Length: 302
Image 1 (cartoon, rainbow, N blue to C red):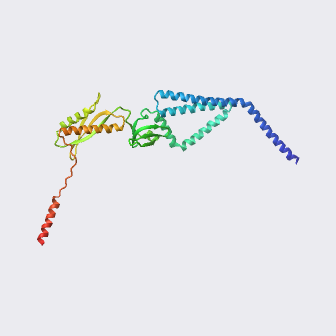
Image 2 (tube, rainbow, N blue to C red):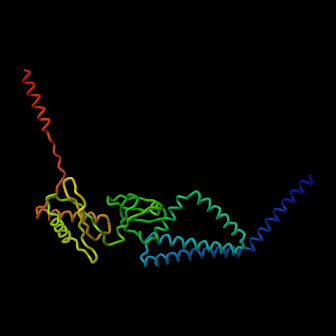
Image 3 (cartoon, rainbow, N blue to C red):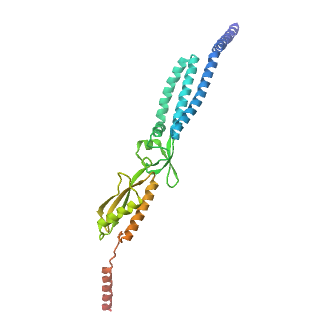
């Protein structure tokens, strides 16, 4: 019985010794702990104000919203991470810091393998955000869709089509595929296809067509209206006329094509030039002959 009491007393004494050592350690390290907390808080505030200043600086340089957002987030995380590591070093926890970095590497590898698709979209979003050929407000055509770029974030791109519907396309789809940007060049070439009758004076048709286009579409230096016959069609001789116009979105092409067709048709009407259309001829001669033969045979039999 005495031995059991002695063991319990010894255990309690050991516990008190441990607690006493911990209290002493806490008291001794309390200044370092307070300093570490203050250092970390200071870096959080520094990160906040630095990111605000950086955002204003990028805004003055007309950086798009997605680029500013990504840049400020990265700088914010870097500054806070530096403050965290300095706080750990103040607490003399260098070994813990090494352990954290090792664990972070292993966890990062596991997360990277599990989220390959998501990370691919994220890195693609970073690349697209800094890509000068793709900006907010541009009219692009990609992956079978065409519209105005409304947003470029770390996951996807939001495009507003001409029918006012929004299309969300993952960043990796655009980074891995090609896209056409109508807004990067102020002028583009418009092509209009048409045909005239075989009886037409082809040289006259060429001159009238070029003059009709030149009246409404001014060609700048180095630009010209191009006219070329392409083929002998079933009912017409087909041609294409190409000219330059101001184009920054797909709607501009539609409107310029509309104006060109109106001008060409008006000019052809004034010069009595025929734009033929397919004609289908139905011949009922044989059927009529058979019908008359049947009627004659029937009367003879009577």
